[in-house]
Image 1 (cartoon, rainbow, N blue to C red):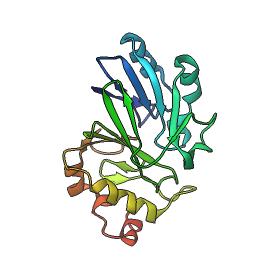
Image 2 (cartoon, helix red, strand yellow):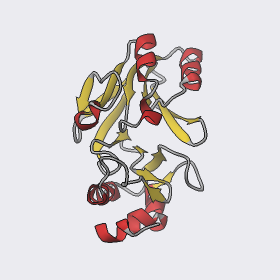
Image 3 (cartoon, rainbow, N blue to C red):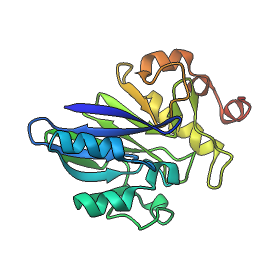
Image 4 (cartoon, helix red, strand yellow):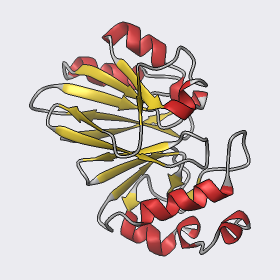
Length: 204
């Protein structure tokens, strides 16, 4: 199994999950410019089966339809965010739904707060792609349309229940490092350290 962390523009991250044995792949949050991802797919002769959106914002979804046309891929997101994704989706997923990419197992964890249908992708129970729910040392904004401090707090508590050795891969490069262990984030991330909805809402 391999995960390629791809920097897009100034601070977006996209993730290409691929199985070396079968060549099957999934691209999480393709964003507005998939040139790097498409080059990697071509160079490694990969089959892009799935396009996965952690939430509906265009800086994570804008190139969905081009990829779908080129690779005949299936677009996956939550039902709650699907209506806001241009061109729609092919499959809606819910809490703990699973998907296989070759020999790689994906699980979907619903994490509303930044958007009503935000989710994270747990890869082989080892890596968590958090979109705009959890960043390194912070969490996603809740003051945009559909955002909720209460939902975000509950989503963060859900993430905190995962094992400490899970690696966090965020949707933006906002922190001092591009990824980190959840265990370390439990000790340093102010959003994860917040003890209540009210305390989370007061964070700068």
